[in-house]
Image 1 (cartoon, rainbow, N blue to C red):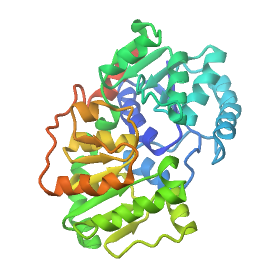
Image 2 (spheres, one colour):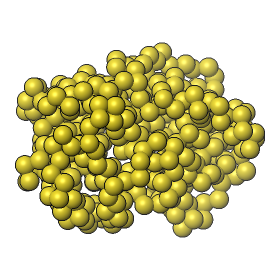
Image 3 (cartoon, rainbow, N blue to C red):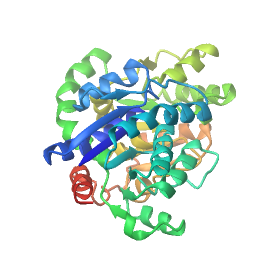
Length: 357
């Protein structure tokens, strides 16, 4: 048996590591293919090191580009890898361009595809990720879900329920395994940044950072809340470029950081008073950590983080950041609980399914 994993962006690495470890324990032959969709060393290499993933067996080096160019480049470079290795399963993760590209290649070659994090839906087809989810789930042979509503989403789209398995959240597996290390690192991190009470911010989606007017409104809101609580903002390269282009210089109370490694960012999340984000993974991690999360998006494909977790959707309004943070600082506490099977064992469940199919 031979399992080939396809990863292309940081969230993929966190989802793939538990599955890789689970298959390793079963002595299954594995190949790790990195498409190079995230090619910045700070956004990529450090994650492999911290997550304990081996150096990729294949690096496609596709780099950046439009959605069409990036997807096409992955397909063109990935097809010879599949033909040369003839894996039993190809496992794809999440909703990035690398995911749908690999699924398309394998579907045409008759190679079975397993999709980790299947069935998530924002119901917003203006999001490129939503298109990637829809297409990948129609092509996949095994759909591995992390919350119960995902199976209903897939059933509405005509996916055979026999292909769908509720396994839990592999991203939480990684969090559970590495949280003790993150906690140990906290005193040094807190001391180096001079942290006490703070709000943590992470923003990278084009809908938030590519519009000069919208980004200016967001930064104005962060400046306003910084009078009540310090703001710590690890800046994604995409966001940094936009801030520089628009000469948006934050006040001293808003601390801009370089992108953080997994352990440092996990530690920052765990100790934050509130997190402001547009990231899907951060919505999940803060739910597990029981930290209030304010999501600056019109919708979320992770409604379980609202129904059961600590997430609150701010819709599409940067001005809503200020009263929402004030509510948290005035002792609003979400009645969150950890969703079913977010228990640190999803990777082993997936490995077990792959090994017997």
